[in-house]
Length: 325
Ligand code: DP6
Image (cartoon, rainbow, N blue to C red):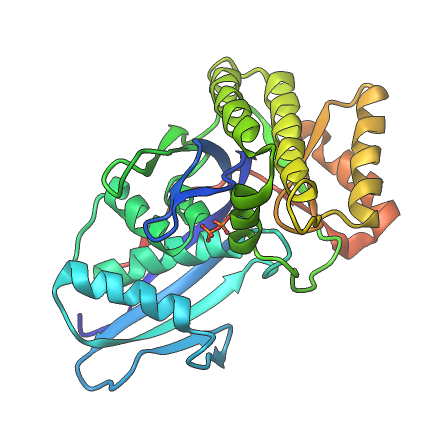
C-alpha cells in the first residue's frame, strides 16, 4: 500500500489459562483456553512496507526499538512477508494503551494489532480465523484478541487447526472486570519462560492439562447458561491451578507478591459478605476481579481504599480487532 494501515486490538484476560506449548515454533498450546476481551486496554499499530527501506523500523510508544528489542516483531514480519511473497522492509508504529509487562497482557493486543495491520499492509486479506492463526505465531494469547467478548482458543494440533473463535461476541449479561495494578514494574519471568519451565519440570504438569480441559468445558457451559457463579468459581480455580505450576517448577518461582495475596483475600471476604466477585491472575502480580457490572463501582472503591485511587481500573467486555483500509 502507499499509506500505512492501522489496526486496533484489545487485550484479553484468560478465564481458562494457556500455560504451556506442544510446539514452541508454531505456538501450539497444550490445552484449550478461554478469555474475555477487554474494552479499556488496547494497542494501536500502523504498518507500511516500503521498497526504499533497508531495514525494518519499529517505533514503540514513541521510542525507536533497538535491533535486539525489535527481534520478536521482525521475526513476525518475516512470517508475514513469507505469506504475502514480498520482500520489502516495514515501518511499524505502535501505541500501547495497556500497562506494559504488568500482567495485563500487552503481547496479546500487541501481536493481534500487528497481525491485522501487517497482513493488510502486505496485501493479504485474511479472514478472522486466519488472522487469529497469524497472531498466534507472535504470542499465544494474541490468538484470542482477534475477537470480542468471550473467546475460545481451540488447541488444535498444527498451524491450520490452532485458532480462536468467538463464543459470545457481545455478551448480553452485565459483567465487569476490575483490574488492580499492584505494580507496573517489569516482570522478572516472562510467561514464555515460565510456562516452558512448568512443562519441563513441574510434576503437576500432566494434571494441569487434564484439569484445564475440564475447566474449559465447564466455562463454556457457564457462558452458555450465563451462570455467573460457575464462571467465577471456575476461573478462580483455574488461575490457582496455573499458579501452582510456578510453585512446583524447578527452580520454583511465583508471580504473587504480598499485595496479590492481600487482594485475593479481600475478594474472598467480599464474597463471604454476599457480594459475588471472583479473582484471576496472569504472569504478573496484578489481580483482576470478575464481578457484575452493577457491583463494579462499589468493589472498585473498596480496593481504591486499600491500594490507592490510581491502582484500580474498571473494564467491560470489548470488541474484536478493527483494521483501517
Ligand atoms: C498467563 O501469550 O504471553 O496470560 O505465547 O509465549 O507469547 P507466548 O505467551 P503469552 O502467555 C499468556 C499466559 C497467560 C494466560 C493466557 O493469556 O492464557
